[in-house]
Length: 111
Image 1 (cartoon, rainbow, N blue to C red):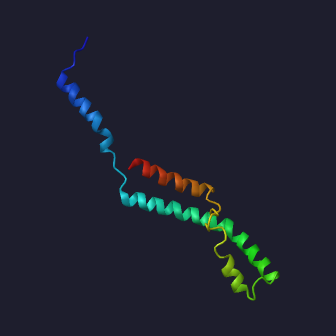
Image 2 (tube, one colour; image 1 turned 90 degrees about the vertical axis):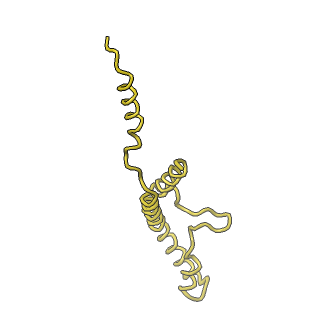
Image 3 (cartoon, rainbow, N blue to C red; image 1 turned 60 degrees about the vertical axis):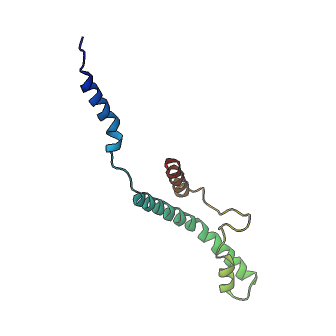
């Protein structure tokens, strides 16, 4: 049976324990850039979903003469789907938004 030299065993153990530290760490700047990319993708997906809903409301506003100009209808519904009072923002359940949320949560957990 082989009886390894304790110095070699200890050196090997130190090398193995240091391996995770050898992997390049993701910098704060890279994490911030990744989060910004994910947030942009989320907002783009939300805008894509909200745009036809807002347009429909504006058209109804104009048809019902809720305001005297289309611009006032546009302005009134410009923030439709965003958080307001106790009303939650819409479409944060879309996959890009969930991904952005999960990434942010994983970064907070790692701190």
